[in-house]
Amino acid sequence: MFVYGVDKLTVDKVLDIASGKMKGVLTDYAIAKVNECRAKVEVMANSSKAVYGINTGFGPLCDVKISPEETSLLQKNLLITHAVGVGNPIDKELSKIMLICKAHALSRGFSGIRLEVIERIIYFIENDLLPVVPEQGSVGASGDLAPLSHLFLPLFGEGEFWVGDDIVPAKEVLKAHNLEPIELAAKEGLALINGTQFILSHAIKGLKKMEYLLDLADVAGAMSLEGYQGSESPFKELLHSIRPFQGNLEVAKRMRMLFENSNNIKSHENCERVQDPYSMRCIPQVHGASRNAYYHLSELAEIEMNSVTDNPIVLSETEAISGGNFHGQPLAMALDYASIAASELGNIADRRCYLLLEGKFGLPRLLTASGGLNSGFMIPQYTTAALVTENKSLCFPPSADSVPTSLGQEDHVSMGSISGRKFNQILGNIEKILAIELMYAAQAMEFRRPNTFSVILEKNFAIVRSKVAKLEEDRILKDDINALIQLVKTQSFIVK
Image (cartoon, rainbow, N blue to C red):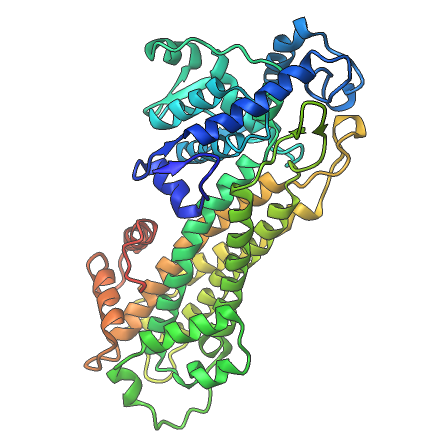
């Protein structure tokens, strides 16, 4: 059970609520806070004093006073005019994560929204009524206006829902559930569409994927190093204790675990090689730096998912502060940092693939014993090279850019929605790169038999071989690569 507005959200809890493993509820304490804040808004809405977004227009129209009789139409018009997103719809899971994060933020009791609106959002979550939200159109301040508008149009019967894989008008879905459209009241439209939930949902989904890919990158790197018969000495604890970055220490420890009781490592420990190329011996420094970026984004995302990010923030019957909690810069910059970090996992993996093709230290060129007639694994590295370059192009930081909007009232924006989308695109490419490295590494390990490897590497070798046979003669590799990509996507490899 998770109590909206009271308990602390984490990435895992959000995803558990989204999958139905955990139920999100409102308690009397949270309900009292919501109702108390709503009462304050009612006082301000009927006051002669201008309070932004409650009895005034929005953005550059903040100096236009709105009468109590026009309040409901003002809030409805706000969502209708801001629902200008374009492009493909986001994943249904992302829509659900947005609903969960918004329900939690609104339940904190600073937004002035009515209880019935929050209860309707929770009904959407529990019954998988997921609004259709276009992926493009947010500049990340005043939060994610366009996507949040699409997310909440169905509250009053506009917009669309997903029904299976079909897109259905919201009016039809509400009718099927015997739900009456909600008529928005003062402040509610603004509370719904101000916020960073689009950016945050992409951060949450990306963090969960990156957590696994960081571990898998270590596994793939260890398998490549075993196939290359590289040295385990660069992973010794003392070496990393004198430069103790958290990520580096964690990766070095994991590499020692991945080489535990390796007969293959022991078989060449007295060879004449002095050192390995950087992409082998600097795995803790490179993978570790990516982990540090992951830790940073995790920390900030957890703060954000437990924050109130709409505007204005209602503090009393006479005070509603029009601030900037909706500004996406804190997450945008961290997402751009994490994007670079994720990209580097692919960059170094591609280099390890290349090393395995060179035909050194007992490996045949292109990882085929019958080269010439056969090209072996020459060409999949072209694919990793292409994906690495695509990721590099995606690493331009949107948070470094800003285009003024709203007649200059919103003159600095975060572009964090683009940061979040690109972060997940990069991670999708990393899944493909690591799948190819695992294919290469398993082939290289074949040439080290009858040597054996650690228990965990042997298990992952077997997982590769369950879908992809050893390459003896040239064959179409597309199906092999896609099979391994699917194993990565479904997180089927053993990483701990």
